[in-house]
Length: 217
Ligand code: HEM
Image (cartoon, rainbow, N blue to C red; front, side, top):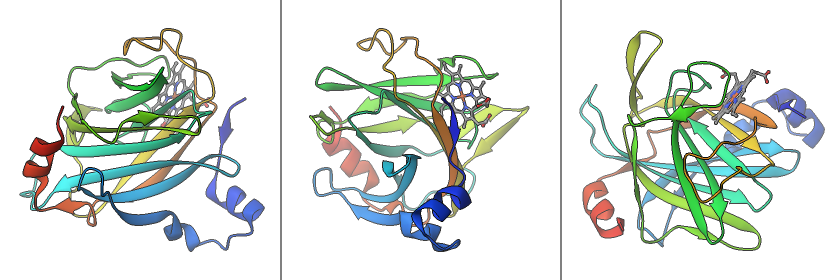
């Protein structure tokens, strides 16, 4: 089953007035890692949400490449969850993740069509010592990404705006990858996907570099 959870449809079911979507966005202070994240809670199935948190350095000079810290919280029934940095499946970095035993596994991917995304070396991930866990109700990961905010695709190079809104997308599957301990595992197509505008303006961290140094494994 594949769902496209259009906001109006979901909002109508939940009795939410159109325009109240901003309630899903928040600033989250993470005591565990020390980062300030801009958070977005996105519905992947009725009544179930994935949380995406993004932190960026502040300031970032206009037009320059910059690292991000990504923290994702997924309910235990999420087989894999992906983030598309360019807001669509194709021609942008995809951060795909799942739980393997007690460990979240992060897989860097890129797709040029609506087929299984290939491993992608244009983005690299640094695992944090903290902020990674798998328990009975949720799994969570926290990583530094180099290469997620500047990428080439569709014949151009795109850099996400560190001071504004960026259109992102997610995909969710209830089924687990076939070889969960490997970050090059195959996995099945998503059950749902959707888009949102993530506010990077509230994601700035003046102490970004020192916080990264303190947290990197
Ligand atoms: C086995 C892996 C995958 C397959 C076979 C697959 C296949 C497809 C197909 C056929 C569509 C067309 C729309 C539809 O018919 O529902 C689609 C759309 C989409 N997929 Fe995937 N997909 C895969 C993995 C991913 C991953 C890892 C992401 C990461 C975020 C993703 C994000 C999206 C998004 C956002 C759309 C909406 C249309 C678009 O942006 O192009 N997909 N996918």
